[in-house]
Image 1: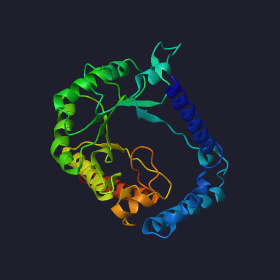
Image 2 (image 1 turned 120 degrees about the horizontal axis):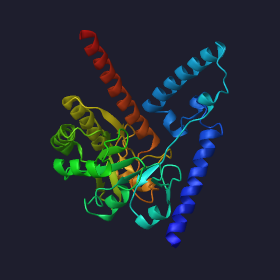
Image 3 (image 1 turned 135 degrees about the vertical axis):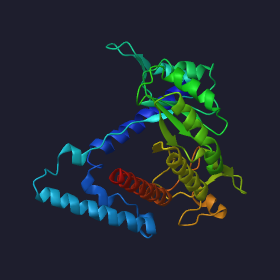
Image 4 (image 1 turned 60 degrees about the vertical axis):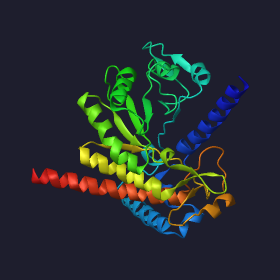
Length: 308
């Protein structure tokens, strides 16, 4: 019980801080040029961000000159949602409530809960608990997931095939992604199931460094993301999102990236209490790569429409 109380207190404090940032003015779009971090300024990613931020700033200036009120909520606040793995069942059960209007049950520890790779047994307690919730739900899947078994999971967790209810989060590694992922997409499509596909390129690329610390390769993460988009293009399906573990701090926890963090650098600023995270420079580098891929995908889609 002590651990549960501590987890709740830390979660509540974090959410209060996020609310203060989201609604207290920090998220104002007019601060976009102030969001870049000092250590990312003298880098290719920092320069690209500053260029983008300046363009946003210029657009805002034009809209204000045209009569848009600068303090409108759409300009000064942002919405956010929380999500985590449904791992510690006593904690999740303690925060589950019945909605008095609909009679449905919601786990109030987060907006969206997912079942992890190690706890997603079809007859297991975690799946049984999640299937009774009205929250949006997720399933983490690796290359070990059998396509027919994935269909069963979808039918259990989303029996009414409700759009937006179920997210499938893939974590396979780049090579496995290209081999295994197409079969999962085809099985779900054949069963006429509605899901959102999300890539988690972090967990399938964890390794131990020579110094004994857990780390991840930026190149492997980027390769898995590229494979995720490639397979969707090949199968005619849609990439729905990306799950990354990152921090705004100047940490050295994942090797690689434009600043070329090496195994020898890990000990200098390795601050995580759990998994290795991307720092701000690495995160920006991935964000720009994803944005460029989506831009090309959109142009290709528009060209197809014109041809048709």
